[in-house]
Length: 229
Image (cartoon, rainbow, N blue to C red; front, side, top):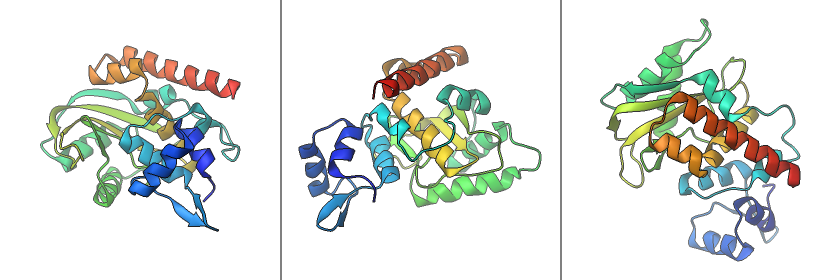
């Protein structure tokens, strides 16, 4: 458990008192190590994503990250943006998403679908407000050249078992070459959904060029904030 209360407060942009309150309420996952609270970075990010809590750009420049980072806009360009995607239930829309993914010929699409369905059985990917995003702790790692996010706007919203009860009309699915790449790009997506321009483009189901431009702006904002830290 690598993060302290102070670390977590900084990454979630709240006070240490707020962190303690969340822990006492049982909402924020924490562990007791030598009589002190410690936090797992991936769990912290997953919780922040589900709770729609904004995070600091510092989370993208963790010292142990290593390797090149992948921009949110590049991941969306690689995976594609699709509209009026059909399907009457969760399996059908996930199958449609997999069919849209530009996968290498050697990748078995049925296997990818079953992996996505298995991840859903561990817990819904719906985070509320009609949006579903990949799990932090359940990355789908494949032999792909770079992370790809496939964005599907559904023709009919589908029940994904969201906490707020809203059916999902916006579905993000993701494949990554490594777990580290998955965490980095998913963190960028979570951060982007907190930014007004990107969130508005998604909520309005804007055209691809608008969504990609907003994604580029998210990446630039992260880079600028990281350079100041």
